[in-house]
Image (cartoon, rainbow, N blue to C red):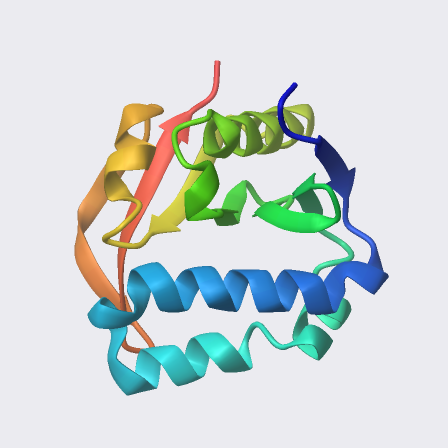
Length: 154
């Protein structure tokens, strides 16, 4: 392949790289929708320490090109996907879809049939294209506008 793409599982030592990557993506694509309260809440809940302390019991997939993180997905064993981020330089190469498929497969292995997620305004179209449906309208969570979505796994 023309990219040196590798898929990795979560390691504690990745926490800072993950934190930096996710915050960068969030600022780039979600900032105009969230305001100061939303940004501060997001920053607080994505510190290196927070990721170190809270992500190790989840299913976390990391995509790297060389040693640079270009994608991160996180699923919980209650059937929620909480994160799916891809670097914009790598959009439309199927990487977001790949992250989602891996997480859905893991959730299914835990005998859960329905996946839930909260989508940003920015990501709504992506999730709809891969089979997610909105449940109700937009709600604000700590100042962050989100759409609750679900998908049945068969």
